[in-house]
Length: 384
Image 1 (cartoon, one colour):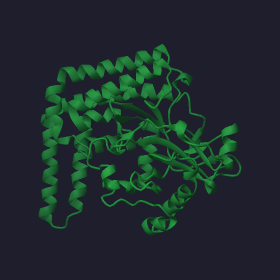
Image 2 (spheres, helix red, strand yellow; image 1 turned 180 degrees about the horizontal axis):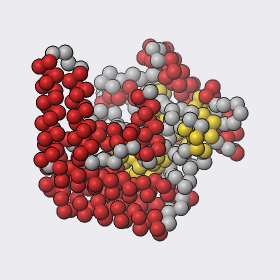
Image 3 (cartoon, helix red, strand yellow; image 1 turned 60 degrees about the vertical axis):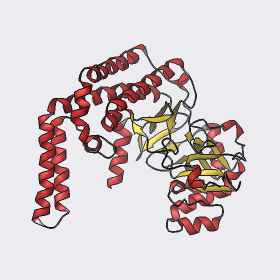
Image 4 (tube, helix red, strand yellow; image 1 turned 90 degrees about the vertical axis):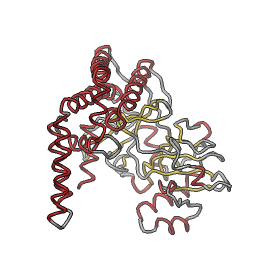
């Protein structure tokens, strides 16, 4: 019999809900194929918005915490809850409160949320299936003055009938993923099979684009930047991707550089990337003890900088293409944000917008996020 780990095959592509990439970063991560996926995903979001549809193809990102995997175990039929540690090499699956204390007692905040999930989610969850969602609140998180809660960075405030339901509930969860019979993550959640219970406030993440404003002017702006990005890809792609390949990939230097520019409100450029490479290798040099080891780290940095200098036009083209994809995405996000999904959003007391959105294209999710606002706040929060 397969183990739960085998059911959610960690090593298979698409088997679990992995880190979701920003659309514009995909070429920096995966070169030519990354651009093709990003372009197709953004076009799919554009067409979805034009149609005014509401489906799990385009969803809102909710800033909940923690992420919870729950449902009835595919092999013993017992209800369980888990954090993302469900995907560990040795999964932490909790059928009882004793399991939660054993597996997560060292993290009381997480354990408290999982205890609430174990008590209340069985009241609404279908008898078959494994799901994933974000916990938005447990009862003690709700502020008395108004129905608001801050699961992570964003404070959500509800009004009207939804606020009344939330106030009476013991837990709130946004369910965004279901695992199919092969253990593959899918956004196609059978919400209609969930029960209703006053102790559990739950809903899906589908975004109703019939309520957004997506003007002809905004659509023209989107197409302008998409065409500019594709022009660079078509004209320079073959040489550009090859020349910049050594800095591609998850956690690669280009990806970390983009996060650096988001934190510091910098415009990405080849020259800026060279400074970033020098600084990163200087940090590495400071972490080793001997002068010889330090010099080796600095020499490695200098070699990277020289490679960029030799291929500066290709790096500039790559980052210009990234810029146009980001501007096209920002146009979509601005329109999507015109409907906030029934909540008010604040960050540290200041009015904000939703965390972002997700376009599910070709069985893979892609983030559509205003990085100048939410992503910057999240990156800075990690460093506080």
